[in-house]
Amino acid sequence: MHRTARRTVRRASVAATAAVGLLVAWVAGAAQAADGSATATALSAELTSSDGRVHVGVGQARFPGFASTATTDNVLISGVGSARGARATAGGDQAAGTVRAAARVDALDLRIGDARLRTGPVTASCTAAPVVPAAGGSGVRGGTFMPASGGAPVPLPADAAPGTVVELPDGVGRVVLGERSRAADGTLTITALRLELDRGTGRYGGQLTAATVRCAAGEADPARITVAAQDAAGRPVADVGFEAARAADGLLVTDCVTDHTGRCDLYELGPDRHRVCVTAVPDGTRPPARPCRTVRVEAGERATLEPFTLR
Image (cartoon, rainbow, N blue to C red; front, top):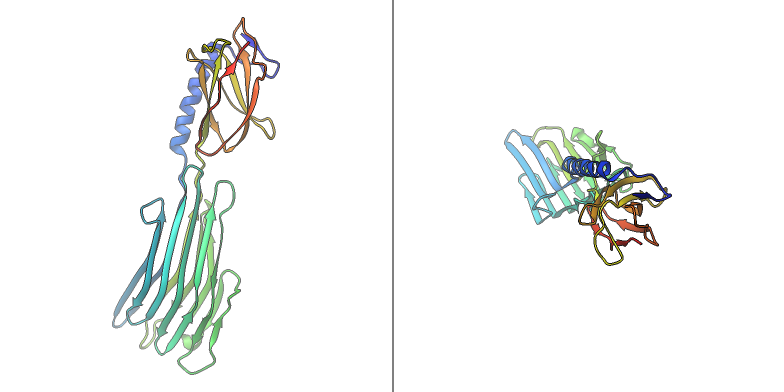
């Protein structure tokens, strides 16, 4: 076996065993890869009073799952008020490990005893991808609380900083705007509006949330490149060594040796540009005139290169 100047390659018997090891490692790695997930809820509520209890869960979408989009034109919340235009969407690409979610309520009109809370659009969205921290935002437009006592209306700031708390008059409760939390695994949860009600005479206690999203990135599935070697007559050539290195910095990712079919697989490749090279050839042959090629693969892609022709 002749070795090219680029790198010394183990002999075919050893390399073939290593190639099998690489296959096993790749299969195990693929089985352990974590899937991304996303959820979106347009409106939810858990409220209680001396007269009963109210539970609401409207506009709920999930990825992966069947309910990727959920829409409700009008929502009546018994004894509390109404919501208009509740919509939630969740989606992503499992192979790439990316997810996205969005939730929206066009308008809220809530009665809290004799007080009233009204808003325009309430929105939240998030995205997540491997390596990159999950990101997102939220907003509440045209929000105003009108006290029962006839006092001055309390506006909800449209440009509030995340987690802003607006205390409501007369001991009614509070509104939390742009609430967000990030778990240890990077999962991001955003709630555009949370209404916390302190139970009192003639009114409910509990909480209501509008536009909640959660995004958790997955792991990108490894890509694979199948390479092949042939002689000038087009016949397969065994015991040809190949390597794949990142094109940007030359970091070796994986290697393989062709079997009797003249083919082998380069596993565990991330979504990137890779330089694939012939690194060793059997005795009596010479490397191709063009021993290296640069190829880009996406997450989960199974690419096959045109055969490398030995001389």
